[in-house]
Length: 240
Image (cartoon, rainbow, N blue to C red; front, top):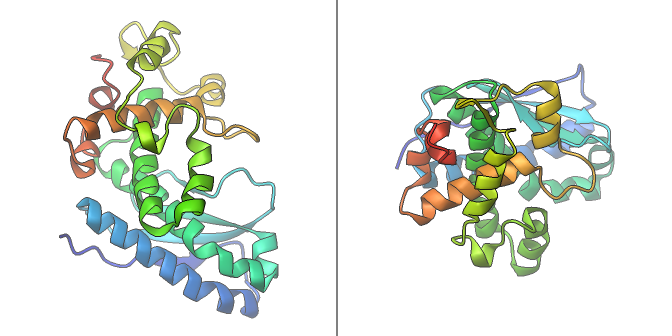
């Protein structure tokens, strides 16, 4: 098992009031610790320390976090959870899942970094698989059912190995993931089409493709620590 250092933390957005920081800090420490446990369980070997910047955001912010490099990621906490102590206590598990998701993106960036759609799909698939695996370890039955809803209808925990290869083939035929044998650059329009985190959408289509591709590799016997080091073309399986 690898020896991964703790995730560092800083507060973003100026001076935070003392009371919310006091309530949030132990919850964040627990969440970050669970995420590190997840990284170690998967056998990840990050070569650089990771640092989280915690931000207060509006309740309608569609994202829970973000990462665009190999060392730093953002944690977005809705204002309603910060101002209400009772709701603050509900954050531990969601923050641990989100942290593992974003820090997995950071680790992926250590091996590959690009703006094409294949890489985005592969990175999302790896991060979602890590997130879901941790969820199954820390959530009870009813919580798992609720969490699983945003993976529907393409992915279900009961049929994870039944990968929809025709779904991946359809993506090629649409001509949106690859063009003339090369990965398609993630232009604004294509990014919006495949990866927009829109309200009411359980999971963007590009995320579903990445998750299905990772499930296929895991079902074939690969480990997530092996998959995270593979080129996107090998993960998605388009044979470019």
